[in-house]
Image (cartoon, rainbow, N blue to C red):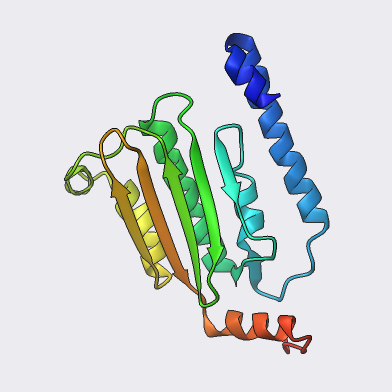
Length: 187
């Protein structure tokens, strides 16, 4: 429905967009009902990011929970939302974006890509010097505070890619090992 609406344009495009949002909400609801209980203090990053899925934003996650401490999961999701806000703010109306979550064991990687206008060379440093700290604080700062890194690749006219790399804390790794091996994690 959302693809046909977008192709038709006008009111049909709006109906298609709303259909896409409803589909994303339904998928989130269904996935939420089948979630296993999580270890105390940990959240599944997939659940936090599923709400970002829409007709313009595709969110791709692993089938298994992507566990992070509650604070790390919330801060990572906030950084992703800030990157998506930048797509909405600086891209043309209807600019698509993709969020890819990868669980690499000791590291969780989230890539946000868009087909927007890209960022001219030196623009991020100029924005920070002017006091506009969206990327340096809302995205990079959050991830840096978690002990992670942010890499931004962009060429004018070619869109932007933001790669967030968030390390897992030992407690998360031990809990995951306990879950995978059917051991009592000890709470």
